[in-house]
Image 1 (tube, rainbow, N blue to C red):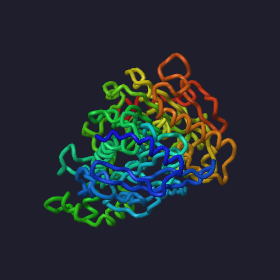
Image 2: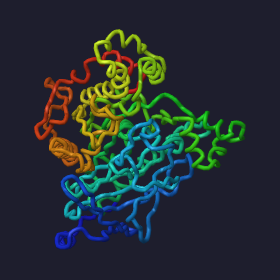
Image 3: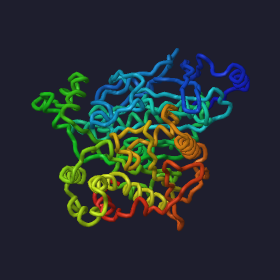
Image 4: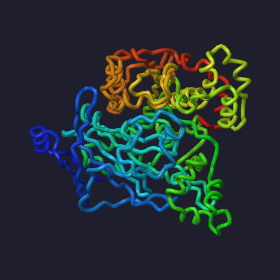
Length: 514
């Protein structure tokens, strides 16, 4: 395992000449050439070394586990590479406001997509902590090359290395064909693990500390982080975990539907038949028919009942939280009848009906909140409550936040939706420092700095950097974040977010979907 420390001479050279036009890293059998990348951030342009599109696996065989890539010779890592094949843009398929933040720098999609990006400071004279970021997208869409995840602002200003990754999504990454072995049904999760193993083995050559990796993810990325906690690789390649708005995955599997749509129902091998279908057609059929491909629960990369499994997971520090209006961009025009149907679909008809919830606890809310509250609480807030409390009870130092700041220049929901609270993913541009200077105000600049100081501070020192009480003690422990937050933490009792979690908590514990 490379454990290379940049030389003093290299540090002096970097200090004298700034960011090198063509930074390079020497691995045992390969030389990786990157580029100096500049980001026009709110605090002015920042520049860092970027190594883009490093292959961590060979071009994958469709539906099969990844195979490690043995790099050799000269590797060009100066350009953004393709995203993985997927059925559409993360928000456009729901009709949402697809901003530039959630567009990929390279619009190409390909099955040859198992790449990672590494962003390092111009000067890395001692091993630096590493933020290993897993993108969201409901495991159906997304990319490590989305603009919101540009690692330059963090790497350039925070003395942290940022890694973003691609992994297979949709049916290409999560295929529940009965012809596959149990431990082969989640190649997307296997991709994540292979990328993490590659970083653990090689990040020292980039100036990183392999023993100071924090895994982080939002939405399905948060779910992925949770599964790495519940089913940890050996040796353990991370020391802390961040879960932002870890998503609920619907109990629906569209593999039989895809088999039918591709005329593979009567084939001797349905798997082989679908493997032979053009990838673009599969993506098109998936989008047109709103197909959905969740991960298989095989207790290798994916487990249910996280509230139980967390007890035996590595006792590492955890930072987790949710936003105030998570479902805003997914269900803009929802009415009581639609909300009832959605509730039944999400819960599989288990537990109290939407009408029972409405009559018992929702009538006092305004109509907007009343129809969205059950979905928001069940899918996000109350799940975070349960998991954070169980993690704290079983020995994990755990901190929890509630993000409810809204800014028009990073609004990814529908017009007017952010008046009801922060939508899903609204915190990401502030954490990564990728929100634009245009349209920003003093509150946003201050909060962006506060969010970066909080999250990146945790990456640097997960044991003691956070300044508010841990979950599980006698003091209020919920960090409340709104437009006026920072630099002083505002801590409230968790009942601010969790006051109506009773029926949702009971249902989540029954279904094992924590």
